Length: 148
Image (cartoon, rainbow, N blue to C red; front, top):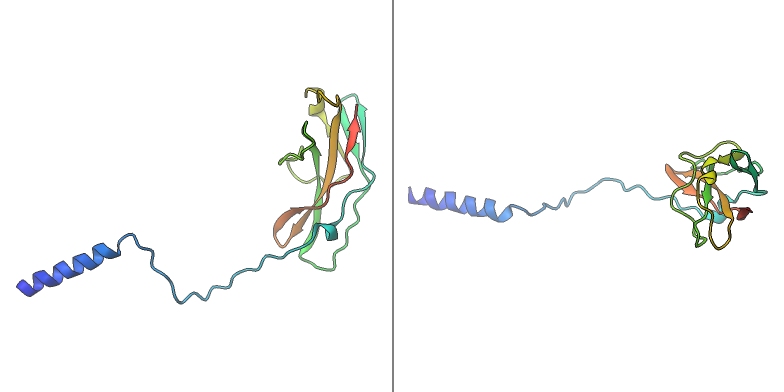
């Protein structure tokens, strides 16, 4: 009877001492997926970006982006349009919610947005978007265009 108490106490202490510790799996045979790396210089940039003021906002147009990749892991998805901040820094979010497939964008919100105090202009840039092995990657920035 006394030996059973010691055995139960020993088991209880072992159980208590192992609580909260993450057990290591020494037999991990899972394959780790390698991240496919690509240079932004290989992806390219959008050319001939133009902006004009129209009745309903600012209309941006650009030439069609021709991209052919030898690697099937890199696919062209569309374009993102950015309105640069007052400091000239590219914002984190694009003006469009999803990549644009066409070669134009109408910024209707520019009519309601306060213009930059220093430049009194709107600054825009267009960025090509790619799907690189399941990840969304932006290409190089186009030239920055200004509308007064």
